[in-house]
Figure 1 (tube, rainbow, N blue to C red):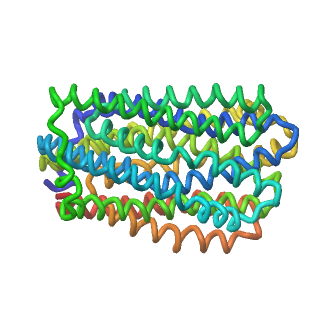
Figure 2 (cartoon, rainbow, N blue to C red):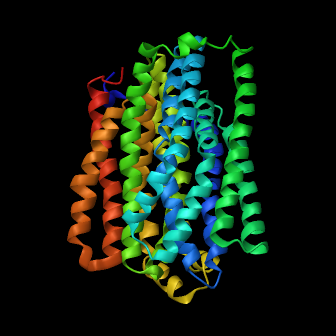
Length: 448
C-alpha cells in the first residue's frame, strides 16, 4: 500500500487515547520525583543543595536511563510477539529481558566507584556541590536492579497494550517518593541526602510492586502462565542475538541523548550556581512536557508493534496517524498552558529572587519546546515499536554532532540563551531526520 493512497477516515483515535491517557498520567508523575526534590530544596536558604541534586539527578538519569532500552526493547519484542500470536516467544523474550535487567543493575552497583567520580569530574562543579552530588548518587545507585526490573515490567505491560497497570506502579512509587521527600527534607532536615534516600526507597518499592503486577497481568492475558522457559533456553546465545542487537542500538542512542542532557547541566554550572539552579527548574518543566507527550509515543509503540507483528502495514500507518494527530493537539495545549501560567510556575519552584529572574528570562523556550519536540517523541515510538533501532541511532548521531555541538559552539556568546537555542534545534533535527526515514520506509515497504 502506497502511503499517498492512505485513507485516514475513521482512524483508531479511541484506541490510541485509551492506551495513551494512562501513560500520559504515568509519565507526568515520573518527573514529579525530581519536581518534588527541586521544589522543596528550592525553598531552602542555601542553593547549593538544589545545585547538588540537579547534578546528581542528571548523573543518575544518565546511568539509569542509559538502560532505558530495557523498557523500549521489551515493548517492541512483546508487541510484535502479540501481533504474531506467539505466547511462548513472548514469555521467552520477557525472561531474557529480566535476566539482562538484573545483570545490568548489579554491574552498575559494582562500577559506581569509577563512574560517579568520573561523571562529577566532567561536570566540574563547586567542591561542596561536588561532594553533595556524589553522596546523592552513591545512595541512589543501590536501587539500580529494582529500577531496571521496573523498566522491563512496564515494557511488557505496554507491549500487551495494558497501560493502566504502569500507571498504578508509577503513581504509587512517586507518591511514596514525594511523601518521603517531605519527611526527609522538610521534617528531618536531611537536604540533598534526604532527596536521595526518598528516591532510593521509592524505586525499591516500585520494583517489587512491578514484579507482583506483571505476574498477575501475564496470568490474565494468557489465561494461565505457561511453564517458565528452562535456563538452557533462556541462556541459549543464538536466541539473544536479536535482543542484543536491538538493545545495543537503543543503548548507544539513549547514551547520546542523556549525554546531551548532562552536557547541558555541566554548561549551566559553568555559567554559575544561580544559572545552574534556574536551568534545573526549567529542565524539570521540560521533562514534565516530554513525559506527557511520550504518552502517545507509548501508544503508537504498542499499536504499531502489534500491527507489524501481524504483517499489517495499513493498520500500522493508521495507528501512526491517529497518535500523531492527538500528540500534536496535546503539544499545542501544553504550549498554551505554559504561556499563561509562567508566574505561577516560577513561584511554585523557587522564592530565591536571582534564580526566579533567570527562569523568567528563559521561560519562552518552554513554550516553544513542545511544538518542536512532539514529532521527535512520536517518531521515536514508531521506530521503537517497529524494531528499526539502527535508524534511530543514525539520526541521533546526526542531531548531536551535526546539530547540537556546532550550534552550541557558534552561540556561546549568547550564554544561556545560546545553550537553550542549541537544545531546541537539536530536538527539531531529530524529528526532521526521523520524519524523512518514516516516509522512506513507508513508500518503499521497508517496515517488515
